[in-house]
Length: 333
Image 1 (cartoon, rainbow, N blue to C red):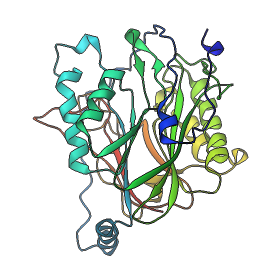
Image 2: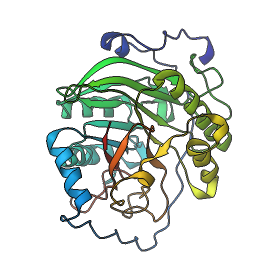
Image 3: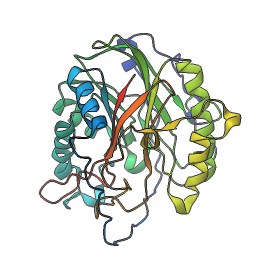
């Protein structure tokens, strides 16, 4: 049984120890994301003029290395049903790598890559170190990760670890009524450019269970307080916040709900410059973000200044890299 496996101490105290994580037994759980509307895509807002004072200041901070760029990106698992289609991983992996290369994030939280997909990305992104977290059993006898990529030359890893989104977060376990085990990966980094230290968390909430999403939101806020304390932090993830499955309540628990302590701040709402790109991050490979459907978020702590926020609708030869669009921010700690 899952809950009888040995779990290593949390957190790991060194990069070497952090990479030695257990692998849970495989279970076979079938799930599929819903079909999306094929309505006409919402037009992206016009870009901010380059003469904008806030934009000039953001560019100066970026050029001087005083800001850092973070991305969250659900790259979709390697679906066997799509092996001969244009959306199969063998066709998409170059698009994912090109997306990252085009926007040059310093930190990346990925969701859903299977083991072989993660191996492909580690090989294709030599400028980044990768903390894998733990492989969780999911579809097609595979294991999916919530890995964190960070630039080798910029960041020094102090600690890393993970916990499960369940009633027993320090033990391998299935939480509440979730369809599969879910977890949060995290790293504690020092920015060599600024000498500032901060935490970066990455997660993927359950799709099928609203109870699991809501309880995961409560637990995430609790554990961030325990792990990060008063240090600055960022949170990346696919939170499966869809309006038709109670997403507003999950978002409330993440960003408001005063009884849960310090809330997570939605980077889009506090960005110094207006949001750029589509209003939605769910594309289903069909459109540049279904308007208003945004399961993917970047949250920050109160010490973090958000300079820019964008949802990226890049295509390559007319094709999307994933069924989710990346969300990206520039921040100052």
